[in-house]
Length: 434
Image (cartoon, rainbow, N blue to C red; front, side, top):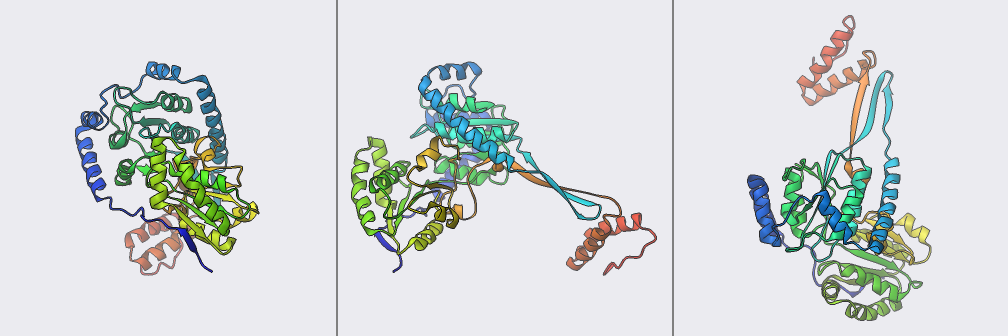
């Protein structure tokens, strides 16, 4: 039968970023040249904020007092889950060594990055959960210094719950700054910060482009955005839950795609009919985002069977993938391309976004084809080492010299030759081209 679209996107995410790129490039150059002063200028210009940038312990304490106890308890609950999951991830990382030939040892070890810059969005929504996801994992990885930046509101500053959370999770420095100026400050080591080795966390198109342009001089978790979600559902799915889940993710932004893939036409029609009401029931700003995202980017696809559904999902490689279908073990084994997987009606993307323990900084725009999301692993450098006795190096040296000469790299070959001559002066070796 092939794929059949009951609803197809009328826009794609492949829009020109040339204006954004030019603007961000100029800002990066300006801030690198102008340092703290230029970053402050942009903060005043773009965020209408000229308050304190580096928060003191007193500032953190004052903000924390404004957070209700019920919210603190919920943040603590989510933090403990994320920390527990990150600690379990870290236990999967093992140093090792292996004797590749007698008396020649090679090895691998994990070393955490020294300085981390965490970006915590705070514009349209105050992403408390992003503070948990980025700072906690860096702390578990044992990075030495963790900076956390979040956009301040004009004449107000950072949302107190973000300040409380970043501090709870282990941020060493909290900056009231957002956008390109925040990314620059962490990358360039402004305001007394150590220069970040890696920048992590979601952000708008300007933040994403700044990270992209800085890649190389700093590491990145990924260049993410806009967020996207796909639901795989069969006849056993609850149409109302499917509709609410799609709309719940569409509220992220006007360009956040949500997709339904199903092999049941009746379910698809029900979901299509339920979504407008689900959008209409949202508060104004959420409604505007969800309405635009569903109108322009939403899709409903009907497949002939579950294998075609899985194949379609793998092709879309969604950031968030929900399965509301029977035989969940089959789906877990079959699906290959996604940022995070939510199996069964009893889970939903919002659980992973906020409190269940898995990280919500995930690959978007089909990059789940080749990478996973933020984890302890992202903060760890995988390095290798080797050690040998003189006897153990003999065969390695001969092979190195001959391969080097085959490649035309005589200088490389001679670094092996000199060791063979020193360690085994009375032996003759077949050194091609010597």
